[in-house]
Image (cartoon, rainbow, N blue to C red; front, side):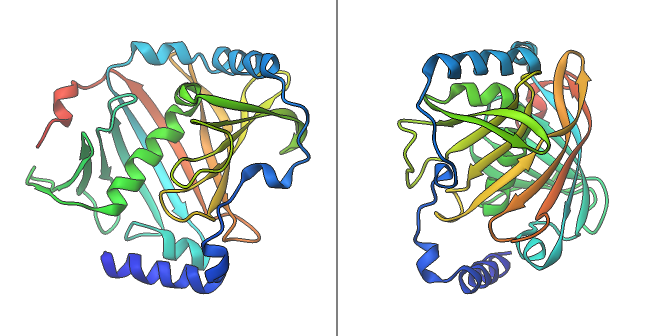
Length: 272
């Protein structure tokens, strides 16, 4: 696995060039920024929270998601942490905690579980044999999937926001908010997010984001599509993902196939 990561890093450096590698991306750079409007930002955040019924997350102690992931093209193959191009997964999480499990439902690794418990990564076989290790793929992908699922709720924890104005996004009239922590300016270790909200419904249409955990120049964008109601919680069930490493087309597509709250006890994720 380490060889694959090093090979992927080498390929990426060749593609983007060493100079670009050291450039700290700023999501605001491609937009003509309007005057900031804190009152508008608070109104949009409230609209988003209401549209997604984010207060219902407070009622969940655990949740389980049937999930699928598919990577495309050469860059997708390099960045894919899994053995197969298309994978179906079972995800279990404690909301807003750094604890969860990812179990492969098919493919070469069927039955294998990747886990993270209070920040410690591990693997678990089908017969419940647990091995603790420091795995960068587990450490990145488990919290990443969790954050996408919980995004409308969790992004409200950001401390600094900036109004991004009105734009046409995916054929919809949207208003945008940039969210980050400490400052809206680019930071070496803290991400920026731009949340594009449908002006009429308050639903999230698209998220743009930096990926500081990987490389300072790296940015991505995910469209949030095909919303479904899961016991009141409104969730997108398809996330087509773009990357600045892929000039045209998609890097990968995530899908929520099903979502179930409070169907297992939190102690099931305590295996270390």
